[in-house]
Image (cartoon, rainbow, N blue to C red; front, side, top):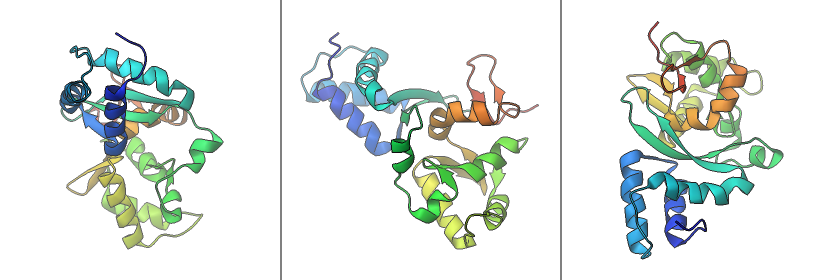
Length: 201
C-alpha cells in the first residue's frame, strides 16, 4: 500500500475533522466510500489506511486514535491533538466564557467531578454548583447549562438522565493529561489498559 496520502485519505480525514468522532462501523463504511469515490485501491485493512494519514499528521501533532466506550464496548475513531503547545492552547472553537471552564476544549471542573466520583459521573446539580464556585469568573447557571450542552453536542461529554460522564473523544484526547494529573484516582482496565472511569468496585 502506498504511504502517500491520496484524495481518499484526505476525504476520510476531512470527514473525521468535521464530525469530531465516528464509530468503528462508520469508519469502515467511510473508508470504503472514500476509496470508491476516488477510484483508489480498496482493502479492508482500515488500520493501514489510517496509519498513512497518521504518518502525514505527525508534524502537526495530530493523530487519529481509536477508543472504546465503557457503556457498550464499541470502538470509535477520533482526531486528537497529541501535544500541548502555545499554538494548540490558542486554538479553540469556544468563546471566552466557555474557556474558563475548559482546557483546549475539554471541561476541567467537570472532569474533576467525574474522575473524583465513585460512579465515573457527575450530576448536573454538582456541575452547576461547581461553576458557581469558579474563582476566575462566575458563570450564571444558564450560561453553564449552555456550555455543557455545547460540550455534549460536540461529543466531549455524554449526558444521561442528568448525569455527565466523559465521552470516548475526551478520554482519548485527554488520556496523557488524565494519567498525569489524576494518577492516583483513575482506574485502568486490566484487559485493554484504557482508562476506566465507570468501574464498579
